[in-house]
Length: 245
Image (tube, one colour):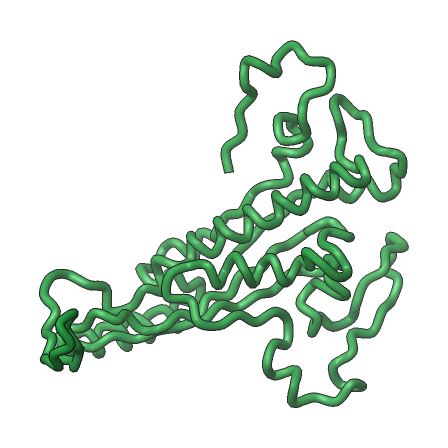
């Protein structure tokens, strides 16, 4: 994401957080180099080759296929979100389900968690060497009780097959007549590779929104220079970088 300083705010004593370098440094939502090297945007080369072949196979048959995109948000500050309204996972779900062709959303264990018992699914807490509260597993997907807990936020989004295919399909005209439809033109056999940067962008926007909300409520982000909010211990976590892959 690109941040620039507007002329209107150059001479102000306290610039908004989104103009300050400490705030801007939080936003580096970048695919790993291995992800963007392949046409299907998969970091595993062998899996990427298999995906490419599968997509090409349905393409030659005049059909289409769907798939899933996994997004990982690393080093997210603790406490973003809300316990009831504006839960972090709820806003992420809303953003991802607003994308074209999206049909499903999961966080952490997702639907697989429904197959477990509580003792299997619960994430055990512990203190790391720096004295921070961590979890030994991450079935919650980095969000607990609507709030980020500092672990990687892992979300998965399902995308449906492209609707327009090179096969005859049944449809109904505006006049109410049942007819056969054969689409013409160039249409992607799979939209998933194009969805990867869209998922990243939506994730970046949601985290940015919650950082601003958190700033407005708690003033934990630096206002300028080395100044921090009322709790230096909590503010120190915002000096890290939030990344996505």
